Length: 338
Image (cartoon, rainbow, N blue to C red):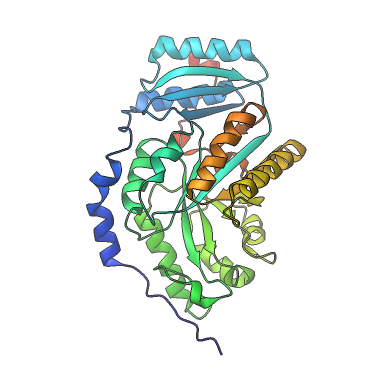
């Protein structure tokens, strides 16, 4: 008989280490831009002028502004108005493109180790970062990503079919009481206040329990995106989130269950085919060097065929990305006459 273990929630040591690691983890990352409220308002106005605004990191702290529209003339007019008002200092380039199939790349399991976040940022695409709460590097990474307007998820540990796999703090399990499970979720929200949503780490067992998934969702703010990682074919997380009217998405492809670069490339090609067929796809990978190498080559070869977007853009109903949160009620072209 397998004895199920409940990993004690919280790790004071892990939290202290995360605080102490802020400077060391940020040492190889570009500095945070100084994005004023006025600049945020300009971006919000621009979003109302085109189909979509994307921010693409260039690896140094500056950003490329990508305007997606079927009306390039109107986009250029909006950009000219924006620059006349004073373009955000961190946006050094602009692209105007027509809509393409969209792919979200979610990078799970961040917080376990340092090192790959700068490389992921240097890909020049809006990766969605999934941070496990209470680990050594989670705090510093979340601060840096929030400062840069990047989208990151709470990667919440959930009980798998094999209990021996639960080696991290903060799992929610079936044997816990409701208040304990909800307390774990609330604590994760508290330590990652800039998160735009949540997805499950493992969870092949507990995500099948619709009642427990409803308990979890009851303490998550209604505007956060719920991404079902689909670690079980019978997961109820997406269905329950949809029933509650939450912004919801689900994993299409796992990239690196097999950490062979050729296999990862095949999974990326499958992601591309799904995106071309349906207009969208969500691929989940992990911070392995093989994954990063395959992803960099894929972007170089096929990036012109799709748009990489943060997970908020693929949620149903759609949610605003992190850099457009809390936009004032403004519209184009009316705002241009102010």
